[in-house]
Image 1 (cartoon, rainbow, N blue to C red):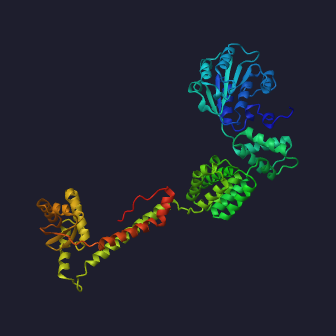
Image 2: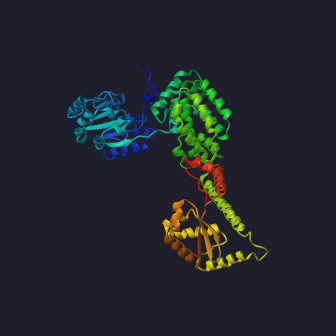
Length: 554
């Protein structure tokens, strides 16, 4: 067959020609220059990134007649035979088809013999992770202490499947994905050499579809060149590769961000009519919103987003007036629903349903602003509570007459001053509820068992020299509080609390009216409902993906 595909025709022949693997080629070049080349080298990384190519260049550099040299001459017998794959001293072995113990035993026997005419006998084992466990074990001793004329170069895409005993005997080099810009630039140079004119946006599209693999990119480029007669246009490239135009992806993301659902449904209908794969579209959308979120964050964009510069600029424009929180909401929804779309029998309907659901999402405010508004809401709640307490306190002044007020009120005011002197700061004795809460605090600290029974009671009346406590609850509660021992404790606590001896009266509430309790319950239910329906609460639940466990009325 006379035709040679681009990936073979333009295979790099020196370390300098290898694309975007400088961290590997520079180290190997220095190792050759310093005569510090390891006897076993492991090359790992994604497919089509140059592992076998670097292995062959390494073999040429070690066996070149001018070598070992960092730059092989590519003219001598050894270099030419390695390039053509016919060298008798460089063995390229496929690990997938030669993975048994017998093949490794044969290799182990052959390493004893000197090379035919080269400096080293080199074994290149591709996809070495396919060797069986027995084959790896048979290779261990030879790999650790090979003869001085032997060199091993392993290549694999799955280093995690190689036993640690093999890994520890090799010097490892990790290859990386090749970025879109480097792939498109390299293909542009090859097209110039071949005499083909392909639009730059088409080369970027091919590079994107290659997924960081140079071999895949050149294979797709070969396919495009073979299928097109005459001028190559971007539309023809899209039809040949059956790829969705990047402009469509940007149209969808723009429609999502501006809330234009009809435009999205129209685009989906066109894509489906053309026969494009909906699952692939969905994967592109997930990546698109991930990249929008990274671009919005504004740090390390060139490193984290593998896209051409003009597409990154378009993303900046789209995300300019959108909050990162809202972008994260969309990205989170797309990612969570991915299995449902991937395995759906009707992916178009699944996508449409997803967008209907997406447009029900309310854009959430930034977390800092949310926390600030929650603090304001809390302060407002406390202020309302304070106003209610003030109103309750005002209701106790209903007996006042004129400017001076009644005798009972005057006495309580004087009594309040005395209580303040005795240590009860900020105590308003005209407010029976607050006074009772203070008393209960004292009981909780010193007499917790009795406080449990007194919690259901209430301070019914308070004068300068006496107080009346109304006992609520069942008979056990009444009997517990009326015990002489507990009565004495209550009298002592009240004496210490008010700073004087107080006449204690205990009454039992026999005719309990439910109106007040029902009114209180209705009010609490109303407040709980207002809290649950508040916009800030809804945003908080949405952002943190939480749920309401309880609502406390302070």
